[in-house]
Image (cartoon, rainbow, N blue to C red; front, side, top):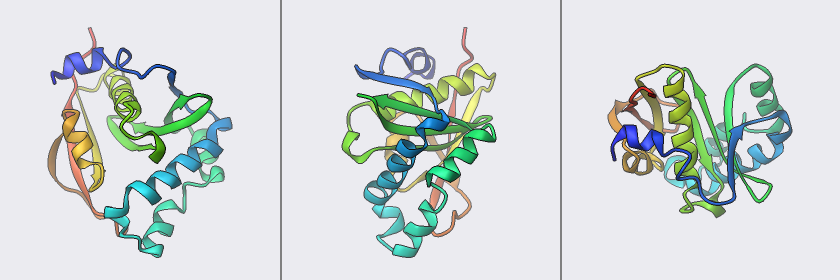
Length: 172
């Protein structure tokens, strides 16, 4: 897929009934639920069902921590469907810091739509390319969406990852 076209279509590919918007403090309970469910149920290849790895990974995904992130100015986004938080994403400068979808909503296009929104936000901020650190679970998703592996990244606790980047054409 051509990156320019992908960014231009970020809004056109949003599934019907899904709203993409910045996260608010009132979203923290739904966000926490999605993050913990996604990590627990979709990222088994990464945490290997090890209770300690899972506890470490989800330790800061509680509502209080998320409230603190939002209040400190973190750039967090949600995909909302039928009044429920369906996916959570975040960016810092030109980096996608997180992207998780509720396990019951995988394959619906919500994750792709939120990824494109995050890419759009990065490009709109003037960055020509974006980076992220993908878990084993998410690597193929990112590759299907035009991301390229750049090598192994630093260990995140016990979760290994792959550094990735994507060229973003400037918005015209």
